[in-house]
Length: 137
Image 1 (spheres, rainbow, N blue to C red):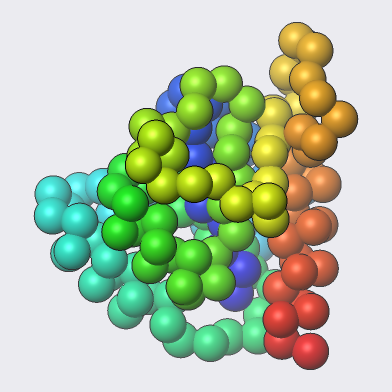
Image 2: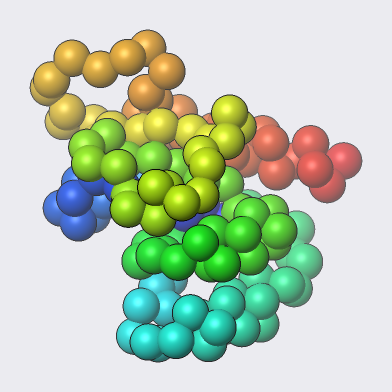
């Protein structure tokens, strides 16, 4: 399983990117949020329970609603790919650094100018799946 964490942008931008992921890989993309759990430690325990199982399928789980630095660290340790949605930066990155390996994405409809490093959702999926296979292989 490939885990992609969507960070930043607006909720609407994240939803658009998720829809684009689903259009690019129909039936292979799911969404997960532990946002209903108030305590960051409970959210981390949920991530560890769900994502610690190693599966070798080509499914993609998109995680949204990550707000705590400890959540970022736990998800990185679980092998999640962080993808920053074009728009406002997620507040958690005021205290946690972004990594060079993090990806940047804008929804397909994004019409404003964007840097070359900002990928389409289909390109992000492709890049994450390639990186996942390299980790396994």
